[in-house]
Image (cartoon, rainbow, N blue to C red; front, top):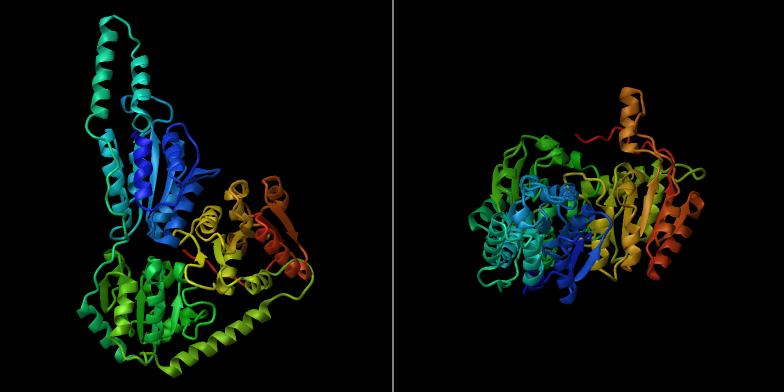
Length: 576
């Protein structure tokens, strides 16, 4: 087999269903070989979106996602998405093309030191220089991506390792010139030696087992100590983060464990939707206040970063139990009384088995938090602007929530409008909310939504954009249309970078750099093969959203351009 076939065989062996790419001559053999093996090749319009899509596949399936990009700018275009995956702890394999091995460092087209660019942003990186090493390196790439704390890895595959040997030998020997001068003969001899080394040995795809997410064991002693802490709690609180939902096969057991524990729970990141839309233990509002009142806080895959004010939201008198795959995160910024390096889901399941069937939560405490949630819901409803004029973002989000099907998946990409949506929408089930994660990256939307529709073809995929973030991936509506992926996108168009503008104007008195045009994004979507709809009348919200759902049911992607008016709902909200 040639190198492209070896790569494709490894991907097939690991159960990879999709490869995301933007075409380039350096990587063509991989793409052709994948298609021949019924691995769907999904070509997008920007390399950054290939990695965003691979990231989302990993989150939704537990199988490392795969992106294949060409050399030089193809690789560098992925850096933001790779860093986003690293910080979100998403396992993915990025394969980058490269110039021919004999031309490395000689000024060839798109030849840069790609390893220097990628190593700081991935768990592991490797450059392959001999064909026989390609299969084993690819196998290791999957193990590294899924093992320990999951994350992205990078494999550099030079072009002369991917094409058939006969073709490559012809390239090299033609380049040698074939002259009879001493210099020509020495050049030809060197190239033949180089080729013989490249192709020496048996080149095949290693037949290793498919890489699985690491499943660290649960220490019985740590479970007993955590159970002892919880037994004395009057106001226990559970926070569940993305790490806890990284294995789709364990979600049912995790939900059952949370129910058995009986503690009020807040869900963050990818854990949003884990308990459905109306679980009695789930709290949605006033988390900061709840943390200040709690006497025991259990953090399941939730680090002490800016989202918890670096640990300052939890009072010193409270006892903290923290479970995290990343040993470094356990004591960064705040030291818990019990720190457990391990898998949060497995620990919660074991902990639930070690507690009484009635759970550990105090009924009065749980009722207090539930009542406060109800009060907050009422206050949100009162914040909706009176009908007339442009749309109120809260009103639009409530309308979208009313349209969400039980099998819907929500992709969130933006600032102010998306923060309002996160506060308002109720994801309907596990792994039904996709956002960038702790890096806060704008531009994830199209890649995430494309992957979600591929992984869940029967599900309604709602892609919520801010008008700022839409600019990063508007062209991917062409990809959705070409590949038959009917995503329902709604852009909250307030003609500004509102999350920045609100504070900048108040503090600095100037809106410079924060204003946008109220552009006709629906027209652009029409031109890219999707269906564009304009929503600028609050009285038409339900009708337009219903029309959008009918369009996607007929197989066509849709972009609803929703014109938003000003809102003070998120005034003062700024994360640093």
